[in-house]
Each structure stands twice: as C-alpha cells, then as structure tokens.
Image (cartoon, rainbow, N blue to C red; front, side, top):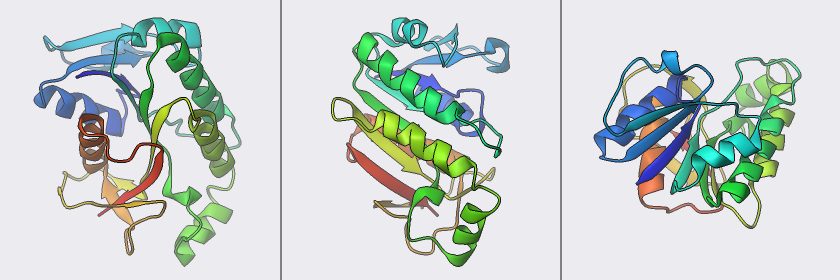
Length: 204
C-alpha cells in the first residue's frame, strides 16, 4: 500500500513508520521538520510540509491509499489547533482524492468513563476535550472513509500484541496502551479496513 503518515516524528508516528516499512508498504512522512525522522529507507519518502495548508497537503497526498494521523499538540490549554487540523485534513483529502483516513483522538471523549477518567476530563484535560471533539467532527463526514482511534493513557513500553478493541467504547478495564500497540492496530486497520466510519476504543 501507499501510506501517508502525519505526526511521523511523534511517539506513535515513529512506530507507524517502522511498522509500515516492515510490512512492505510504500510510506510518505509529511512533516514540519524532516531532520527529525533520523533514518532513510528505499520505500520512505519524507516531505516537508504544513499540516494547516490544505492545498499543499493535498498535492503531497494525492495517489496514496490511506492517511494515518497521530498528530496531536502537546498542550492541554485552550486551543483550536486540533479542530483546525481536522478541517485542513478533510479539505486536503477531498482535493487530493483520498478517501481513507485513520486519526488518533482520545478515550476521554467516550461517555462511559471510569471515575478517574471523569475527573481528568473535568479538570486537567477540560480544555483539550472540546478541541479533540472538534477535530473528530471535521473528519467524520459521509464522503470520507474514516476511523477514529481513541486510546486511553499512552505509555512508551514495547508492544504487547494483546490489545483489545471495541467499537463505540473503551474495552472494559482498559486503562493504558503502548504507543507501539496503537501503531500496530492502525497499520492493521489500513491493510484490512474492519472499522470504516467507526470510533474505536483500543486498550491493553
């Protein structure tokens, strides 16, 4: 497959690159700082670009089969960056004639949260949640084949390959997942689309 990866220098994005290449795919990393990729590969193309410029992004993504995004600003303060990114991504997909995308969001957007999840949503992440929801709403459109990936707390440990998934909710008792496991799920979903137009909870 030809995969177009956004957020490729981040925690999940780095794993997306390596796993996609291990699986034999042709990969384009669309990044603000190409030097941060840190390696080369015969099936990897690195393009410098701006995630908020839809025309530029559309030109680069044309001809790809799927866009995988792990873009996520680190700030938890009030922001509209995620919504603006979602709007730019959706516009670029239409202009570039690419229908399939997967984007990483947050399990905090589920309604059936644990007590701790509800507390975090109402306090530390209260500014983040509306922006995440805005990003999802921009992408979850009828003319696009989207999958929203909502993990709980992300950790840097190795993949366990025993993660669980659930459509429309977080798997029961799922509180953490490694960034590498999220990447494995996303590559697998790109290869065999089993959750089109679904919001998927993924957790260990």
